[in-house]
Amino acid sequence: MDIKTIIILILLCVILYLVKKITHIKKEIDRIREVLVDIKDGDYNRRILIKKNDTTEKICHDINEITLQSQNKLIEQKQSEQAYKSLMTSLSHDVKTPLASMVGYLEAVQAGLVIGDEKDDYIKVSLSKANYLKDFVEKLFDWVKLDSGEWKFSFADKDLNELTRNVISDWIPIFEEKHISYEIEIPEQECNIRIDENAYFRSLNNIINNIIVHSNCDRVRLKLEESDTKVILTILDNGDGISEKDLPYIFDRMYQADSSRLTKGSGLGLSIAKELLRVNNAKISVSSVPGIKTVFKVEFEM
Image (tube, rainbow, N blue to C red; front, side):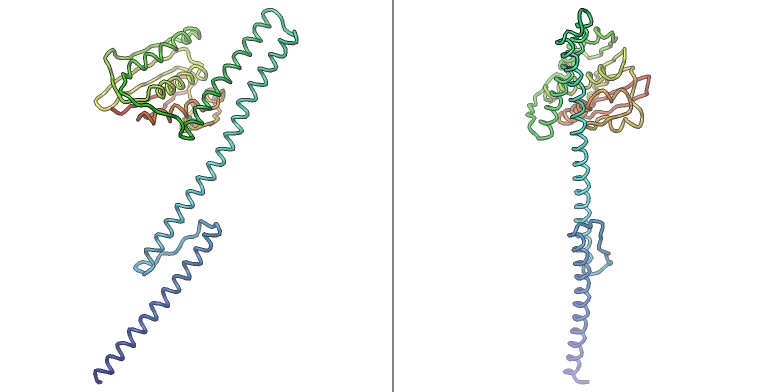
């Protein structure tokens, strides 16, 4: 066999190999295209079978990853839409119920259906409903600002101990009015951290307000302590507590739990508190033994 024949045979083998390879790649592309058409039509459960050491292995893997990410985003979008619908329903209920009640009481007063002490009681209840609506609108406004990124933060080095004392001092008259005993442990020495003062005030006020309004407690204990790496704020109450099944959701916006602790309000307050604390480089958690104690724990990184 001469050299020319050998070269021709080699070329034929190369051509046959290339034809086979191209045919295989074409089949793989057709297979990929078929899956992509299904994905484009909305079937995000489709995946491309990856053949190890195949020419298309990398691109198949990438397409599967992109499809999975798109599927997850679609799921998140649907969950967000459902949460938004639930939010609007809850908001409507939280406004309409106390508003209708307040209007009913005031109409009775205006019509002269009640007099004397009963009239005073009706006005007192109406004022309570009005204050509830005022507080609700403030929390809703905070939530909208946070959700839209319009909340303006201003960070500075502040004494956390002094800031906490300032917040608690406003609550002491309310504790006493409601016959709630209180124990406050805040160190005298300074504890300087970088923080947004207004965001901290709002978050701490929301936590304490949740305890006052929902826990039915008669004792509150607040303690602030500093370690080498953290500052830890704990707030304990001896009220109704939170059931184990509700604990994972207590900071979710508008979550409605079965326990009386969560059904009296919108759930916005604790959700806002968590977000504002996150911005201040802090984490909040909660533990509870129903009927014995509930403990909110806030950890600031130093």
